[in-house]
Length: 114
Image 1: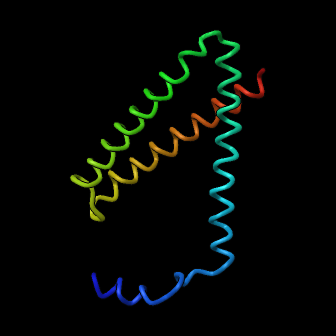
Image 2: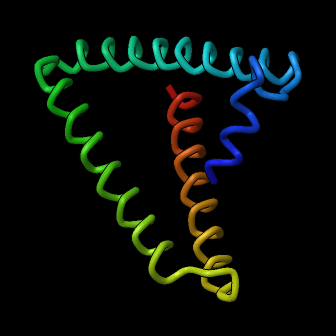
């Protein structure tokens, strides 16, 4: 593994194209802009709700819950998953996609109904 690092160490930049580099920069910038819009929307919603002090508490709890769930999923994948268990992982992928679809439909219906 050290030899691999020595081979790329002499180069000034990795062998990616300028278009790929620009696409990554655009993705990072888009993430921060959309996160800012979402944060402003959440702030306005909490301000109208009346419990603005609850926002930092909910943000920390959401971060901890996401970290716990992500860690549990990675624990399961590391200890019980392999390329020879396609049925289980197909079911897991289907569950993940259905969950994402349900959240998307919930959010879009909530926005169009109001």
